[in-house]
Length: 289
Length: 339
Image (cartoon, rainbow over all chains, first blue to last red; front, side, top):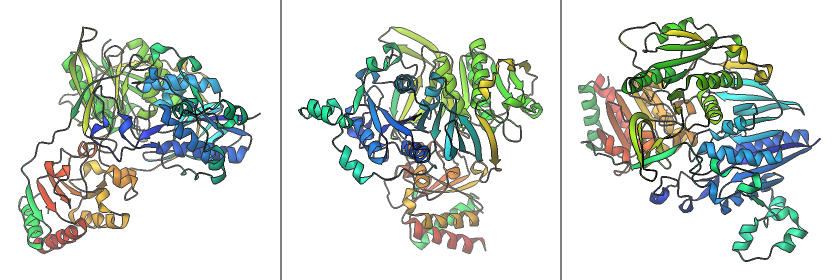
């Protein structure tokens, strides 16, 4: 029987390039103004899923991402790298969701696929919480293995996985179905495949094509693999009251800009006599030595 | 009821982890402020040392289970017992260490209890909240304070409606402050008969745990490098300076991500928090997440080519220059002057 794997991936603002308008007034992230990338740990997660497919062959990898229309980029990129298909979970009702509401929406989407395995990145660089994976596992009543660094072996019944912990490693066995989260130290993702890029570069969601005023009905009929399906609240059978700001137990009370109070500091240049002076002062005040 | 709970992690040596003791220290202050009790949860085996340690932190009750199914930590066994305990005890606040255990367990519990959880808090404060839209006052909420997105802001997160209010905190963020007088907490045994074979589906086959290699928290002097160090090769000079001064070497997240040094050396909100006598920041611009992990250092030297680096604002000494020139000169000058 074909094994089904779901990889959960997130499009994240590239927090290495953050400008001033990064936050909206309600304290949520203004994603519009930042370059958007494939969350790094989620690429490690995709690679792990692809490795399982290499070994077991009869495996279908579905990528699910939750986000606005432009997050369809994540599905395309995952398909270029070897995923079989993807769904974009998108709805205005998701806006402002915290990790609990997000995990609820994603768990409803995963339920539609009924996979043997869910693979997520350990954490996303825009929040670093590492919470969504375990929360989805709980909602789906799945065992979880977090901090996965390496797939040691896999057959149709179970996997052996090595986890990267603070002070060492731990190897565990876990039967299917299960959810795992993959650490950044795991194998990096294989590159985009040129042939797959050619085949799938016109894969789009209906909304994307509507925005470009293109007629898509014939194209999707002829080449259904180019249709990236969009799922909204109704499509996954989610209950609105658990979504968005209303479904989020955590609220942002306030956002404070950090104002640095300038300390009285002594300035030095890199000239020899300046450095001598600095070291002399440190030694005299017994800060060093 | 309405008490503050700390999930206490056990180390390989069956002692309570420092991060948990730090949370108990903070938890005691919050409990005093709210006029409630502080309670501890300990699951594992060989708990005698842990019980003794817990006498120094003002804990009223220890909820414990001593059973071989509970050590080493496994998600499902711990999650089931902790969830059942919280459903019964209805804590007001629960604190977890932001470790590979706490970050595995806390979200699973939060999902089961449908309560809020804030990761990597750098401060926890009790305060009130007025919701003007609902025209409702909330008293004595836990303000979960953390640097957020991008780093130039500090966010205060609250959970007005749901209980418990849960937060994770990294090691070193809160101060470890034992009480002056020891007490004898009440010990309440947790019923492990709840555990079923299905909670044991994940099996630990092999563990290789090493003693901690670097102890950044204990260092009196910290030499830390940022992305501005330029390369892993350049980073080596920091080890030379550290050897000379008897210091430890740390790095910013950017330096760790760039591969200049290992994760275990990361200083900041998602790394270790340090409070050394002297902090030498080399090629570090000073994002708020980094400063959160070092701004309580007694003296700070910043070495940076830019006079506008944010870290200069909190530095006692600012050297404007190229680290690769400045550090050799510092070493030379130091050797000359201690003769």
